[in-house]
Image 1: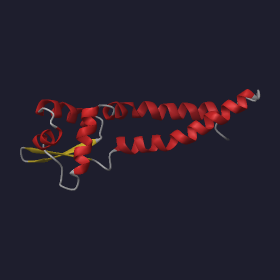
Image 2: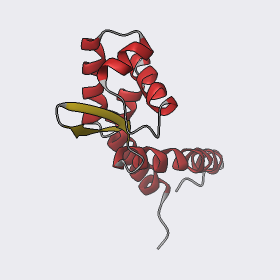
Image 3: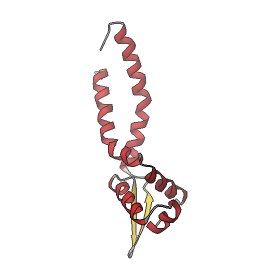
Image 4: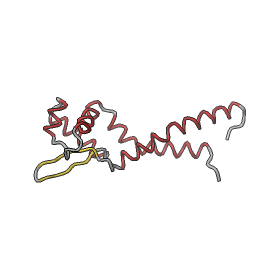
Length: 126
């Protein structure tokens, strides 16, 4: 049985809802700077708060706050070595995978909405 437009739209909206925390986290300029810093320094096993602070010119307290948000959403991860914490982008993050899958669905959903709009104008709404 083929999915109706409404069913596909609802599934898409549910995916969006599941991505909202990560989208919120990524929407902040400071967190974007932190992510860019982590990307630039990727492959080094992660960065400590002081290193991120130096690169971004954001206070240590603010860096710690933003790292917490990114950790809670699963966008980054932390590796502990003794008393040191190294923060890094987690390529296996379920949040990043979920976002990737969501963005892959945006264009097909927009096409489907356009097709449905045209169908609706002809009086053949499904």
